[in-house]
Length: 249
Ligand code: PGA
Image (cartoon, rainbow, N blue to C red; front, side, top):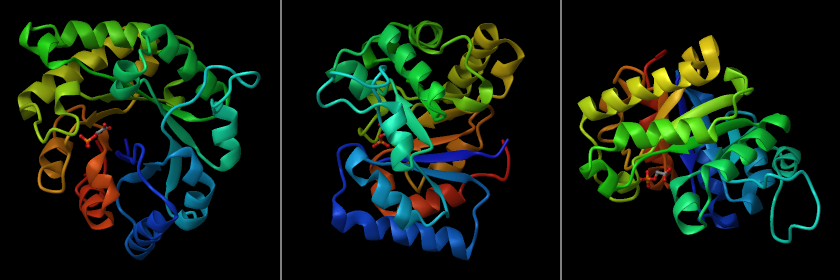
């Protein structure tokens, strides 16, 4: 499978940062990377981001509503993201689960809406540091997969990101053995949930991925790519990361 390197700009990015997207597009045009590149932008930048990317890589959103339209002031539907030019969306990011109390049920509804709108859906799972210390990592990820991944979802529309919460934005990452163990477990959970289709769902690792360690993480079995936060805000660092991905996983 072609690895996927997805950037997540979170609540960062103004008009002035569009040149970062143009820089990434120029790098991809000059030397196409082995990995597929995606940048998940704030909604306000999506349509301009699509223009700046100039067809060289894909643009996604970071969250969507579970409803298609209606009286939900401030919300943005999956269809609207699609209409703006996004081809993918992150759902259930741990910041949404933690800061906005998003439950597995809500994440599953958003994933379903995104899928119906024709977006590739990146569903995030991952344990807190307390859960890790209590030895709950595999059980937490399994429960989040069961609760957040809609059963009818086609593998082609579905990506899972393992993002230990304690690794996000902290500079701390699990050992490569730990990443391998959790990814292998998530693979089994996906097969149990989706049947044979679960074999082909890419499983990204996310949490403090940097240019310095990306190649080691991307070489771990069952790591199908990366979800990159802070390091995706810097075009050169993001380029080093997407060039670190092997031709196939
Ligand atoms: P980070 O964020 O790379 O800055 O740790 C990853 C994420 O939250 O998706």
